[in-house]
Image 1 (cartoon, rainbow, N blue to C red):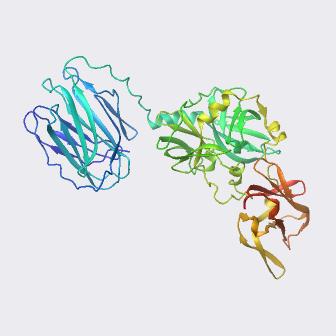
Image 2: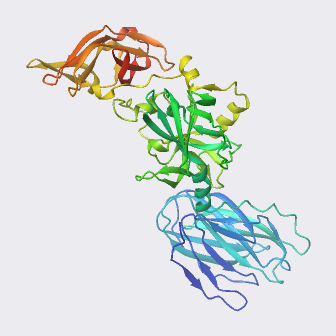
Image 3: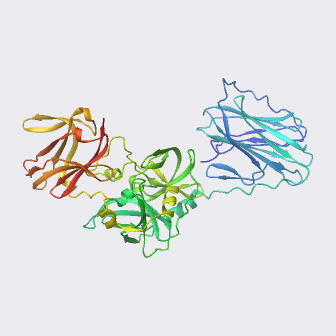
Length: 521
């Protein structure tokens, strides 16, 4: 974000300096004045408001400031100033309010309460919040005591700020504010610590790709959905080097995160994890994936926070990301990790969005617009149990089985009824949410005719903890290239309690199609 080119200059009476005003969304207004008796420079004007619609989120003052990432930061925040030591005072405001064309005014009041200067300018901030700062140049004759700056927008009060000019020692200032690094610095540091994680099946074939990042020199954080069902994991470093691992240091299937052990350590500098909670409104960076497959930095905002047991806390981001970015870091403006992109609310549903027979449940996210707060990982790691392996997670029921031969199914869906014409059947009233009062649902599978298929097929239903709830009867399947058949099952709904379930269609011993459904009372 850059300054707008709009500006206005004032020529003031002898004893006062020129005033230059500049305003931009988030990039501050800049006005200068110098007290020495003073007089009104402008009537202020503006349009009366029906009520208080502008709110000052933050005000501060100091003598030094810096523009960084479209923001203005006071480097030495304090409220006391000495004219013999300080050459100027910067007063900064940040407001919430409606966007559009506005008149901005600042009324400077000396210790006697007299308005000595009024500065005004017109500007249309494109979005809220917007901010501004004014600079008052000091000389040795500046009256001591408490000064006040009243901000007005369209004639309505938009906040007030008080500072003190003293003749003696200045109170010890607050330590210098922390200055965020430039986005380019955040990008290069994060890119170096980021990895791609590929899920490999029994044949060593990659069936899903996501992201991750180093949190220690030999540990990578990623989402549980990326490792779910994997026989092996292939890690691609930013350098291009590839490392395989099956070692899992810690995990949480419902919270959707996993920590992988990497041995030997590739000596990649890890990212720092923020130790405090994150709230709505925080500006942050996320590592997205470009159409060409490279990493790009994206600025987003935390626009909501949800807590849905047993999935736990999630950060809602202002933008969604390609699923290849799931598992990547979300960082604050200082480059510290605040979250893990992804955070599926339904275990296994992230894999369902990867295509090829994995249709998503209605209402589930179609991109990584959630993030798991990194503080959740920190808390779990402090009490993590013994590490395990991918095989160990599969053995204790943490994994869903990978789909095999997904090209054997050309189309599958749930429906309420079937249309039968000329000896063929086709689903009618297709959906993935049913009420028990509807009696039954139909699962329709159209088999691919490219290869001959001969065998038996059935449907198994699982809850979100991978426990088998129900199983259909087995049907014979005989697919010939000249006559691709379809199969459907009538599933009684009374056997399901309200909730979300996973349906796996098995051909022989292997699952070949999968979908999530929701059952209502």
